Length: 637
Image 1: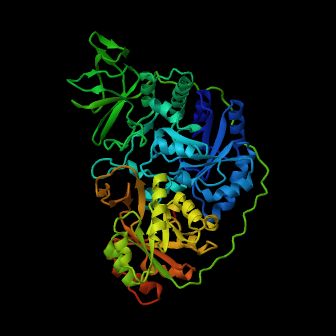
Image 2: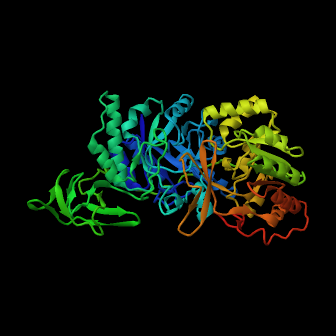
């Protein structure tokens, strides 16, 4: 079993290698999902690889962000350098880049990132050497993927609330895209007076036997933004317990769990594989180790404590703490106190009844092992050249593709002149909705996340229902439908993250283009054979977490709506997208297919956009109120 550790900087890399890692993953100066970590450079990567290989440790380099057209040459230049530096594999988000990576560096392993949202066995793309499965999967789902391809899963560290790769929250609400490695973590912010989106930290140490039996080949630890103490402690403890499992004497010591908590935790969870909920709405930051509750100015210790340790109090919005200078036991001052002792300890800001935590420990240390120099090496440039992408203009008249959510919406969209109506395939009233559509083509719309069972059920439904087409939300169903019904017209949802000319040439269906691209970036695409979302609520998170609140209000007063789609909750942006007359700029740049997601005022809105695309006069000043143009005019970082 491979133990894979994060290396956000040189010291963390040393800590991982010295404490039992079989492999490390790290990022360079661009195209990695942790752009705010110290990271490494293209110049010093060869020295990193040499050091790790000398320790018997493999090196995987992240190239797991979405890539814009103007960045493709630089991306493949970096991939070539990764291969020539001797790294063992590259980790990528976009499956469309896989064939070109294989051509660029034939000997380099290719691992598909959890950012690719692989949730079923039909979604495994050709050409990858390993798939990092979504963190929301159950053990049986992981096992089904592991039987088909070497699979890797996260076992420790921070969790994303949204399915990775399907989160636009930071991008739309803050202009920093998680798909571009610059997530601002809006899920850790306050909503409705608490932290309903803040996940606990994953810790699967006690579940190792169950996980190993799924057949995965690697256990991965999150944490490139954390330091060498965290990396070393987690490596050492997981290494010890993995070895114990194979020795037939698996048993987790309580002290191991305490040390993991001291290294970093937001309260631990065993994840969605074992729990229906993974959030802790009380506080979004590191807890450390629970010491006890302050009673009559004293603490009955739930863990050992010594002078020099750090202590904190967390209560509502309040957080404060200090370094322990004195510990008063029943016989007077002591340097150390044991679990079960009752002591007096100064904790800045603590009041009667407050829970107290130990947030740092002088006793928690790790070995960093051998040091090495980060030398800069110049490698010869590669000979790989991108293929030429032919220009593909759309000569058809402009058309409106409208997603509706009830029967009345289907009727209104059809009457107002929609060319295609999309309708949720798992709604019970799809037959009635279809009966209301007599002019437009009627497409079924699939979820953006699907299990193997969902894919099979959806394929049966499509075959029996015989719609005019299907709006597909994820790769597994696309694969099955193309294989079983090759003549069926298929459109791809925004969840495919189509970002560049490689993607447009890759998918065997009509995709919606990513809403993270600007007007000039859309105009620069060689092919215009795609759909552009121009109106409606942008889904900024898709989560398995059962969020009960219908609205989430942040501290700035912005309100985000939620809605349930089959087994998942979608969080919608605080302002609906509404391009209105700006659609004409898209038309001038060669785009002809426009997507609207409408829950209210369906007929009126479709009618307005029909006038716009036909060149009729339409005054949109009042209509624009309360809407956003998204990234149409704002570059995402």
